[in-house]
Length: 250
Image (cartoon, rainbow, N blue to C red; front, side, top):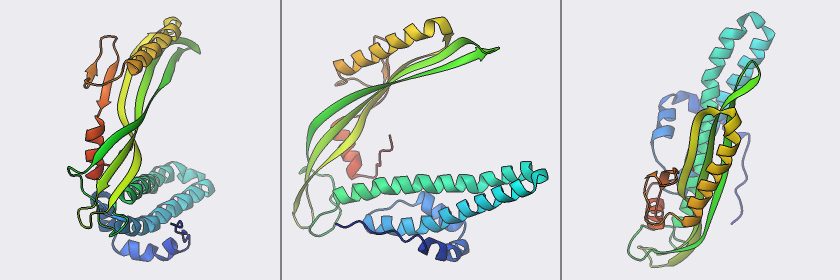
């Protein structure tokens, strides 16, 4: 299916209409869920005029504050309001992008109805990958490193093949989706700087060992080697949530 071309001018034309319904339309955009692909398209058309408006106001205020330096402090504080509005619109557009992919997966290719989770759904885990990232935030006194806050963070991704059947017309559909199934970490706050390097190496190894051992049968909590599991889901739970109202932003 060809990708829909974005009209950069139309949101500008729609700004007056958005202003008439403000701020009720903003509350509606933030709170009300979308339920299908068509609603995603409508919601995007509601968000883009507000995004353009917030960005435009922010830029105007930034220019005015540069022209009138005496009022810079007040104007920069006021600038935060449209700035936050633009960030919120950007976040909502990211959520809608995920929602569009979700509905593309869950809508029947034949009758376009949304397929529900039922006993016909079959789940097969195709792949598991475990990655580890490190963080080391150094605290200095008189430009001399004295302490560090360190952490090693692990994340398990699973690729799942899902086969389902439309309840309306009986058409069978198979698709794959990637989920985050586990998030874990081992961390320490304000440890002596001279010890932090070796500790971080050990933390990373502990998290990797946990990932190699696997997470089947485990739950949220701290393991024997001090790794804290802060998020864990079974493939079945993730798929059921995907068919429901969940959109994973991890």
